[in-house]
View 1 (cartoon, helix red, strand yellow):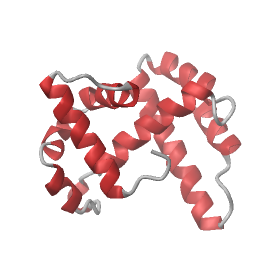
View 2 (cartoon, rainbow, N blue to C red):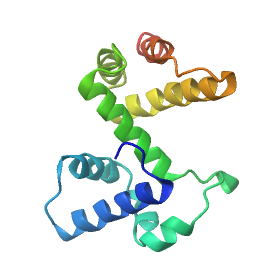
View 3 (spheres, one colour):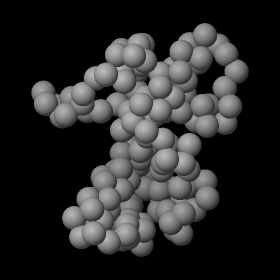
View 4 (tube, one colour):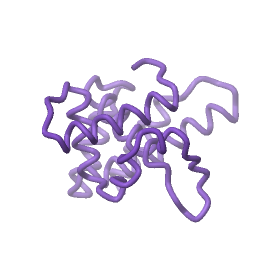
Length: 143
């Protein structure tokens, strides 16, 4: 999935949820997604019905997070760490995970840095600054 649509992402996570619940064989990406789904059982209701998931609007009202965005960010950070791209992200996330004694918590902090980097990129009209992202994670790991 190099440029999946919102619908593709939602159907992917709903499919992984269903396959994992049924004990079906998962490919590597599905296995990783399934592990993050296990970390977020509060999202189970959102994963039950792919059609409803595709139609649902997550606009932040009522403090409700978008589970598909959240899970996609977990996958993105996992993939970034697996190939160390941007350079240094693997070490920064590992250090943060050791500092927090939780990979999950480290991901949540890295998500804040990732979101900030993307927001800055969109606001400025410039490409994402991977070095600033890594430095943000590193700062969190050292405080």
